Length: 416
Image (cartoon, helix red, strand yellow):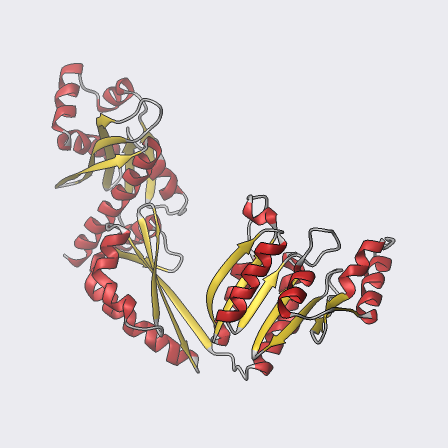
């Protein structure tokens, strides 16, 4: 069964308000086994609203609109639905009585324009709204259901639970399913590369349904399954997860609400190791993320904003400092080692970047050669990456890469 949502209001199109209604409705339709196929925003234009509604009635069994049920001249949902369905608007006294009572309870005098809210298309099922002044209605048209709701989120959510969900369950003989989901979190590959690895699993079917969501340095793989019982849905997820893990392995650093820095500190706690950082490039982003875990395994970090501060931290002369910087890997190892010595930690982590080519002097994109160093007693490890992007993006990606490099190194140590 296919559904769509139409959010109405020019304020949505110009960014004055953000549409949260569609997300809520989508979350409530999913457990009913109703597939949400379209979400459309349309402004307060009769012609465009009529076109949008007409198209929706041709392609979807369930259409839910939000907004446009107020008392003002630009609240056109009633009139346009009536026009598209070819039905007259009919006044309902009991709806008018409820609207008047709502104003009286709050000590206000109702104005004449609110009377228009008591009109709904002929033959429509009224949706009474004790939470506000805008009743909704349900119009059944050739086996389809057009459901109109107010745009105020609090009222819309109330009416979804009170009227819409019970109506859909009864009208379409829907039995609520169990829906389970799990998110696998990936670092170390871009969205397209992750897609290449599991494209066939994504395409295989709708239950379980697998999808990708990308953010800088972090790819989320969402697995969602339906079942008559929770165990049935969980079993489908478990099978899909095993296949994905078999392909991506160590690239998966956590599930659901896990964070990369949380995964690092858990490994440190498991191994009873402590960590400190030195950041001449990332401005304390690594330390900030690690501090947010409240883990005692992170002892502290040093932010080094200038070459002079970095040289003083290392305790070397200018000649040796310049030589270290040219070597890159040796430079970040020395920084990591010095951080370790300064904080008396088991491990030191550092990251530094060197500009390769600046494409714009007005804050545009740059290219950088990034070095990440890890030091511990008897271990000297460094890697490098070539990155491009804005300065802010480069620093954020550098912090993520540094944490992920440390995570992978710790994972190898636990296995060894």
